[in-house]
Image (tube, rainbow, N blue to C red; front, side, top):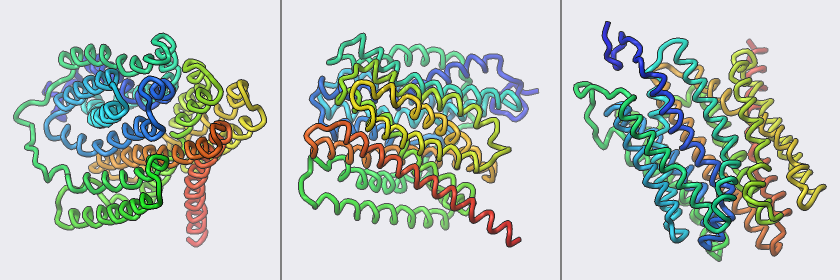
Length: 483
């Protein structure tokens, strides 16, 4: 029997579990940077003199570039080998992390974060691809389960770890260690990956052409999302109403993107997004829910940590502890949701969305009834409820969305879904951040009101996702009765 890891008849690689450990460490590191930076924002503002727009770009820019390169990076890995692409992405991530840490101004930090997001987007599909490559059968299920647990843990410990690093490094420069911590971990992971991850044989590599990546599709979608985000993020920095014309530009670019993708499909050329997937009701519904939900829930960490640090004087460590209930609830319920989703179906996602919405409303009420230093304690339980709901949404929605997708399109379908999640995160942070910072400015520093209004906006986005899920359930029941 062949020992070629790229053959369908290969024997299990004896190093596969060690290689998985390397993949999980790197996956943990890239996902950690989604949440860890939130508690560092006040420190960045103080250390670099960053504006509210700069802070929004530090968070949303990472999510945006991460999402835009996911699908093209997956195709590079398919063509040239997972190991090579993994090592390139890891090198870029380490360099970008060091650049973030050494940033001498907000502009350099934002640019470094954009590059860091590109690197994260390169790495993410390689991790899932390597798991598919190295494992078969029940072992593959175990490996993906460990990867899912890693995602949950990275979300849970991110704010807390960020708070500890800033506490140790000091308020003015502690934020730099949030990025520097990636450097030694990345170097060790690189050395281990060279030794443990199998390389694709040279004769199986495929040629790379620009047409393989749909570069115009990437450009149109990226420009459309940036045009949507710019007037929101720069709302305070760009006076006048002229900036809102960019929303029209965004709409034109998105429409142009859809027409281009259809054109590519008719010609049989590579598409960034395979629009035929959206003919599957479960997939299209799941993508809409993911896009809108990520626009809502990811902003919780962003505005809550700013509120408790800037408005209430919490340390970065205390801010990390304040958002830990949400992260812990999500980490625990994600495992439960994965176990029962096949029995409960879309109702599980709807129930999760309802819990998230109620948890957000409860947090708003807690912040109103218990103003001041004790808000962290008052909001702990509703934040936990919201976190539990979140765990019942993300993983089950992914499972249900891909359920009817043909195996031959599973990779691209998962990449498109993740792209929607990241773009939703970036746009949501831009929208909710604009509401939050505008309220702070108009009330001359009333952080409590700004937080309540910002979280209300995020809750409305979650409510939209809930309405989409409920509408689908009602339509499904009606069609079942008519049959």
